[in-house]
Image 1 (spheres, rainbow over the protein chains, first blue to last red):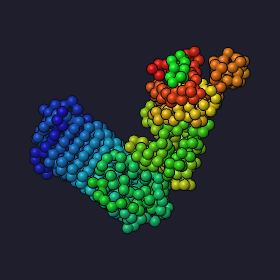
Image 2 (image 1 turned 120 degrees about the horizontal axis):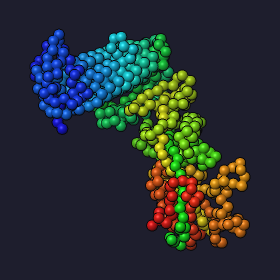
Image 3 (image 1 turned 90 degrees about the horizontal axis):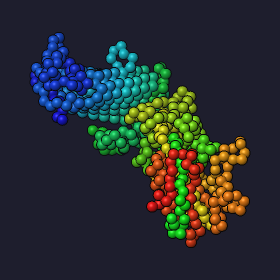
Image 4 (image 1 turned 135 degrees about the vertical axis):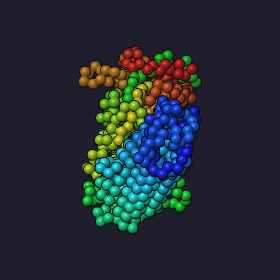
Length: 280
Length: 298
């Protein structure tokens, strides 16, 4: 069955909330019913029929074309199915996601996958701040799932993250892994300042040593980490896109911290990546 | 039925339901993976007194293991999930974790679970770290050689234990030569193990005893030294009986293992001192699985 395709029919000036357009919420609806769904648009409303041209039927495979950065909350709390987006995406994509997959071929705003519970998000572009993070006031960010960013990420990657994995193929901004409770973040290029700020537990793997590591992180020396051998093999087995992990040696410089907050987290700085194309 | 002069008795092997799990042990080199595997399968020949039956299933190439290092697949069988749960974590803790550079992973991921790292993690004394990768939880336990990685649980599968056949030979030397070849062939069959030392049982038992404090005793009908004393199952020419016991994950796996094993034994023929192949059963009352020798060898 042909996937349900939404092609944006106008140039939005304000944020357009696409949270009703998930496989969960569209299940059992025909095209007519879908076209009548009202979406929040700025301070007003707009129907799906006015905003998009619809083709296809299969709401398990949703495609959004001509997407722009005003499209917000795509895949909000979805639990199954696939959403593919061609173009840029605004804030809160994959917020509270419980399962399924989101593929974004473009840049993404902030709060990507914030509070996500499970599922996969792949971004072939750059991402704003707080990917996998927690909404203000929330105790936990993402509690499971997988976010793979092929471009650069903004500040506070995985803020308050509890479980799951974030891979950034490019560089990450400041406060990467801030307030992490657990989980794994891998950055295959530079990371900004204050890496692991206030982290309690969790693992941050960096390909390059950051300019500054806080005094509350203590060096454990250069080590061959058996765990990384397992992690990299499992990632490499996930597909060709992760072939880079076959070339990474598990030898790292380990820093334990943040000693101001339990200190059971770790920053692992890779010592050797064999030359070749990166993950993308 | 005769194959190459070897009589195949018109009888059947009687097997019973068990519970099994599989562990994948990896190490820096295959040699050290073997050290751990040999240790964990030590004193695990029979559930009668060991609580568990275990053996190496096969070697694993780095491509086949979760961490890309050489490994060994070990299978463990017990009468119940509870018995496995009691034995497996203890053995992994004492035999695998103590072996330098090893890691231990689940080899079965379906069905009920028993703990591995779930109980061993406490060895980390608070410094242990949990990691979930691809929906599987691993424990990183800091140890003196670095880190001992252990999967949280391993799956338990229904299994069949006690598939067997007896090799009746002229002497122990003749019998052992044939049995060694049979065990080599059986080891190539997937999903089966031969838990006894070298895969061969030198002292097969019967259920019960004249003494009420033990529940298994020597199978006098097959003891060559008692031929004149008891109602013996042996002819005048038989001077030694060896048994091969097979545990497997399915009836089909044991069927195949018995077939290839008996085939190898028969290759020796009566000319090389192998006279008969028989099997141990208890009149069909012990277990629901019956492996009829003649049917197998058709």
